[in-house]
Amino acid sequence: MRVNVTVNGEQRQADDVWEGESLLYVLRERLGLPGSKNACEQGECGSCTVYLDGVPVCSCLVAAGQAQDREVRTVEGLAEGDALDPVQEAFVEAGAVQCGFCTPGLVVAAHDLVNRVPQPSDPEIREALAGNLCRCTGYEKILDAVKLAAQKKSAR
Amino acid sequence: MDFLRPDTLAEALALKSQRPDAVPIAGGTDVMVELNFDHRRPAALLDLTRVPELREHSTENGVVRIGAGVPYVRIIEELGGALPGLAMASRTVGSPQIRNRGTVGGNLGAASPAGDTHPVLLAAGATVEVASARGVRFIPATEFYLGVKRNALEPDELITAVHVPATRAPQQFSKVGTRNAMVIAVCSFAVALHPGEQRVGAAVGSAAPTPRRATEAEEFLSGELTATDQWESPKPLLDSVKRRFGELVAQAASPIDDVRGSAAYRKHALSVLARRTLGWAWQDYTGKAA
Ligand SMILES: Cc1cc2nc3c(=O)[nH]c(=O)nc-3n(C[C@H](O)[C@H](O)[C@H](O)COP(=O)(O)OP(=O)(O)OC[C@H]3O[C@@H](n4cnc5c(N)ncnc54)[C@H](O)[C@@H]3O)c2cc1C
Ligand code: FES
Ligand code: FES
Image 1: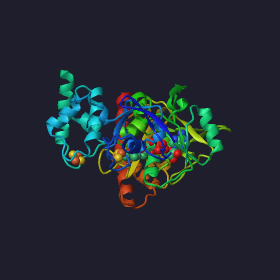
Image 2 (image 1 turned 120 degrees about the vertical axis):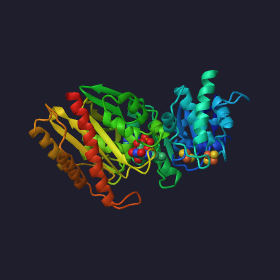
Image 3 (image 1 turned 30 degrees about the vertical axis):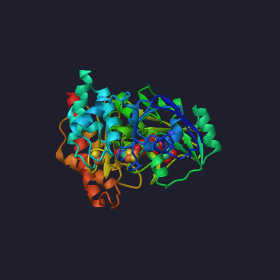
Image 4 (image 1 turned 45 degrees about the vertical axis):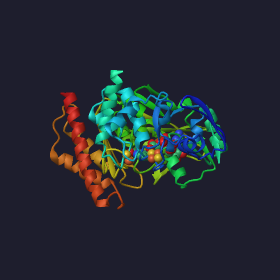
């Protein structure tokens, strides 16, 4: 089937989509957007997190056909041109990235949090990121990054 | 495979009666896992996310009607006041991403014995509204769960809503798992006080082939509270009463040994959960009555 979906502000079309295919597969394999990662395909790791109509979801659990005529924003759509989003800058500056596999999902989840809650507390950050697994960092640097991102945002 | 995309409830029901083999998909948090892992190859998917009637909730005559497609995040944010038990259970489901997508309709559709909303729906006295092109019927939650992952739906029916009495009386839900987020319950328990009817509702999850009410525990405690006139003038509960309640809750379960826990552990944990949640609910009730 054909799926029409707005991705990062652009009207996109994917053809020959299998009806049982996930939005994650469409993004990575058909639309050339490999930012969202595929690790578990069962909603456990969060590395495939994207915004669907403004709400963070696991794209591996959205059927491609459910995204028809909807708006998707992926990690590729957070920066403005060459200017990184404050959340992305903060992840770099805080050293919250090691192998980087979990990073796109964490960046989207953290982006949603700091846009909803300007000064998130530690428990709020932990809760908001509870659906994102990282095997490398031990999470401390990620918490630092989210706090730094919140400061950067409020300073702008 | 076909992908069916109704825009209205009437269209969805018509499609389901033409294609009883079509698998409904709402939040997809159960269905997509099965598809991704090739555990299921349905002839068709019936996408319910475009049906506006399923995404609404309303309150009439003290009963909240929650559309089958309302995601957990909205139950937490919009219905926490009227439905404390359901909101509590919703907060424990998966992760934010899962709660943004997953629905009570999907929890009922999957009918897993471990589903977190089931004990609450049983304890609160909920009714499941189902519909087909033939009409609407109302199934009490107590009659909805038929077996492991089996429910009372006919092949041409969809779950349209769940009706839960709004309450100001205390309700509690608690589950045991290996960590705080993202756990399938090893066992779970819900208790709801119904002062108007001088009755206590109690139900267990993940501890039998289906979620089920702990009827003897309910009757024991309801009788005890009425006999000692505690609905009118509540006093701190005797330890012996809490302990007996916990024992009867554990007796209501017929758990199995599996990777998540042994049957004996589940029974023990349920008696502890029952005692604790009753303690919290009763403390809340005495506070309100004082
Ligand atoms: C990572 C992860 C963590 C999870 N954690 C929990 C947890 O903590 N607690 C818990 O209870 N569950 C949990 N789940 C399971 C799942 O999220 C819930 O069961 C959820 O309520 C399913 O809702 P859904 O809308 O996503 O259902 P879907 O996947 O869309 O559907 C589930 C089933 O219901 C049927 N269905 C859906 N809507 C209808 C309808 N209106 N009428 C008839 N049938 C329908 C579908 O055909 C399917 O069989 C988890 C899942 C994942 C992936
Ligand atoms: S790939 Fe989607 S949550 Fe892991
Ligand atoms: S940086 Fe490697 S998984 Fe998080």
